[in-house]
Length: 106
Image 1 (spheres, rainbow, N blue to C red):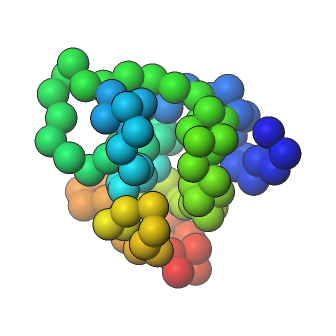
Image 2: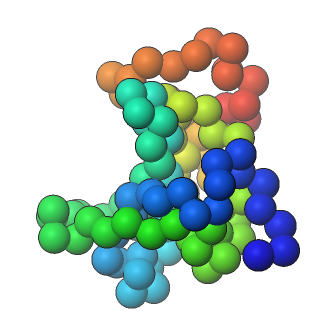
């Protein structure tokens, strides 16, 4: 891993889905406020059986565009249509959010 901009360690386990493991683009990233956990999923329909954990470093190796989200504040999410599209940031509905982080919502 040549460049890793996240403040979390690269072996931090995060939630993803079997669709991403099978090659689907990550189109939704959430950084949850309650436990500061991360979620990197395809944005499709999921069941509990679709949930898996991987290291954030492995996901960043497979999709370098995730580096653009290293400053995503807790309580925020980022969405895009596909890997070829730009990320759009927003707040996670119903979660707390630090107002001081507003400048990182770009």
